[in-house]
Image (tube, rainbow, N blue to C red; front, side, top):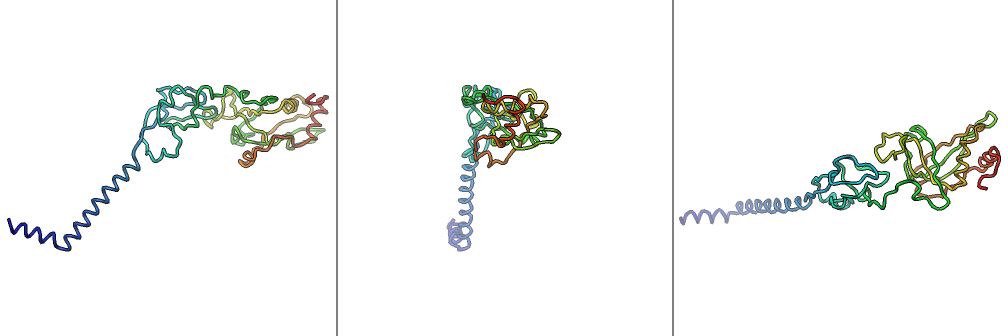
Length: 258
């Protein structure tokens, strides 16, 4: 027994043995802290995801979501709704949708009182809605979105000659509808646009409506999109060409706005 203890003592006092044991101890400590760090980093958290595609203005029920586990680190700055109690009985915001399997972002979900039933709800005093007929081509492959500021150009035919010029600048798109009257971007981008709506003054609406009522000029209005900076600058909507206004009034036979 004494020899065994002596041999163990000699082994433990051996420099190489001490080094090996120290390395092993270090590896164990590193492995322990690595696993703790990894577990803290991952720390899976359950979040609700849609069980079907939910379109704008739909109420969310308990059957419309289920839970999946995601990395909690992802949720720190993602603005994701993490509790089903914050979904049930609420609604998908206008002009957005949540596809099947997707998480719910806070900005996509609103209370019933926050929904817009129609474009007129946000109109300022003295404004009305003007609808412009479009298609996939005139909207540049459906690249005009609600909130964009664009220009409207006017094409007319006078005495056999064509006029094509800028008519109204920096006008904001209120909505993009398909042929069924649904918001194109409420469902999916494969839905083709049929009409753009704009909030305009009554005078501006009168000019735009007259364009359709003067057959001898064969006039058409075309949307012309601009870049994102144009929208961000927020310039006031304005007429771009006074001569076009005079032309419309002269053929209409009365003064617009009076």
